[in-house]
Length: 184
Image (cartoon, rainbow, N blue to C red; front, side, top):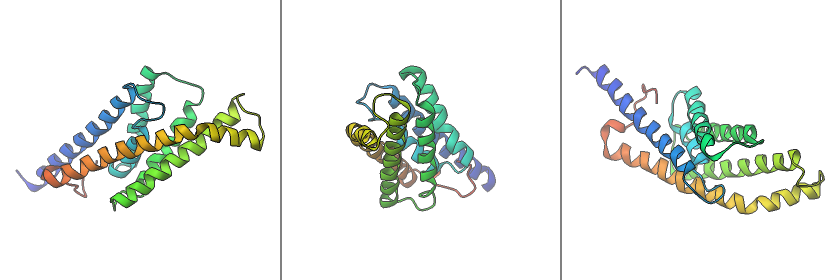
């Protein structure tokens, strides 16, 4: 086999592994779980960090979320939730070339924080649950704190699984090692 064909074959294997991991995360989203303890934030960060094609890095988590939403249901703030996960995908770009535990941990924390701030702000702004005052906004954020901890826990656990799983696959199986010419 010529070297170019071998590189192409390795890129295909790596892409299939990465997409399989994203599919696993998408399936885990529809399994019963505590509120906000889902793999979606981790899936978005992982996509941004490992899928080389930037458009596809945004598309895969959105498609996975949309597919999952057919099972878990839709609500009025879905555009805000989707936009927040696009922010998480962009955060994944920051660790793309230098993935390590500290950098991944940092973007996991940033992703959970931005999701909490954005989604709770929109709950306050677009619902009738809280008065449209600073006190109402603070009450909304306070009510969301338990959900934040679940979001953070889910992002940490699933990021460890996704990033750690890819790290092990790259170390143990040569065909999964990154190649600068891959499309994944």
